[in-house]
Structures are given as structure tokens and as C-alpha cells.
Image 1 (cartoon, protein in one colour):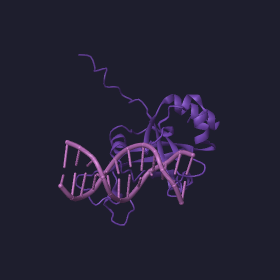
Image 2 (tube, protein in one colour):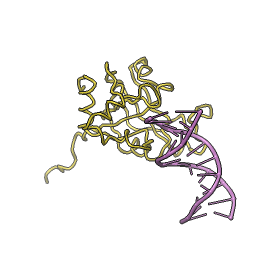
Image 3 (spheres, rainbow, N blue to C red):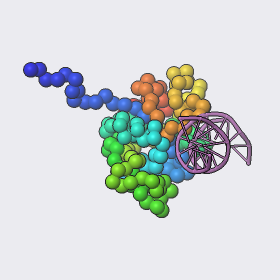
Image 4 (cartoon, rainbow, N blue to C red):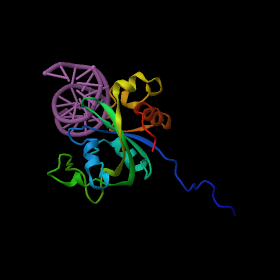
Amino acid sequence: MAKRASKSRSAKRRYWLFKSEPSSYSIDDLAAESDQTTFWDGVRNYQARNMLRDDVQVGDRVLFYHSNARPMAVVGTCEVVKAAYPDHTAFDPDDHHYDPKSDPDEPTWFMVDVKLIQKFDTPVTRDMLKECGDLSEMMVLKRGSRLSIQPVTAGEWKAIHKLAGAKDR
DNA sequence: GCCAACGTTGGC
DNA sequence: GCCAACGTTGGC
């Protein structure tokens, strides 16, 4: 019997946008980490959690977006280097993201590890996103879109690199 | 199960 | 600082 063709050996790479308020964690903070790697903690929304837990895979690419800041912008890119595992900050009463209802034996909240690929020399500001026709459908531009983890398309990934004058690495 | 009150997000 | 859009909570 032939091997199952459906069992593809390399899952298709996906693209994401992760939001962070730079006042709490910026791309410069990531750049300053040893290994330029960090865990992406604090996601406390079920829809975002589901994507993080079920869909974000090692090797996926991430746009690092600065929200609630000046300027609001995609400031660089990361690679997912570890898939979802329990977000320990949910169990720490001293942590800002503590969730008393979560249970270490059956974790509610998850996080992934990301490694910096590059910080853009030219951040792609929200205004630039809005002015680019190819990016007008991006979720982050939609009114009331509060998801901190959002899927983006390969085309959007490419267009943003073009606006940043950056190589797609 | 409904829904009003409340808290948070996050652009403006 | 304002406030629209959401998500969550809790009384009923």
C-alpha cells in the first residue's frame, strides 16, 4: 500500500500578527533578550488562545505590532520557535495576567516562544497600512478588532516587507 | 438563557 | 481624555 500522501512532511507555514503595547513589551525588549527569544505570555482571550494553541506552529512567521503607542506600527518580524505550552503567568498571583480561575492541572491559557528575525529599519505605520490597497483588509485595521493574535496572509506578509524596505527572511 | 452593568482594549 | 466595540459577569 502506498504511503499516505495526505501526511505532508512539512506543514504549511502560516503568518500571524501579534500585538504588544511597547510600554509593556517592545521589539527593543525582544532584541535585548538573550537569544533574542521570549515567551509570548498574557493572552487572555479565548479566540486568540485557540489560535495560539491550535494553529500557531513552529516555523510560522509573526509580524510584531506596536499597539496603543506612537507610532502604531508593524516594527519587525519573529519566528515561532516553540509551539503552545501552558502560560505559567496565569498561576502567579503577583503577575499582572494572573487568572485565579485557571488550573495548573488543566491550563486555560497558553503561550508560544518567538525569536526575533529582524527589526525593521522603517516601521510600517498604521497610516502606511491604511494607505496600501493590498492591506486594506487586514484585521488589525478593522474597527473594533481587539484580537491580540491575528492571522495574516502571505500576500500581506510580502506587502509589508516591501513597505518596510526589508528582505523577507 | 437573557441582558444590563461593568471592565478592558485600543484607535482617535 | 474620550468613547465605541467587545467580552465577561452575575442577577433574575
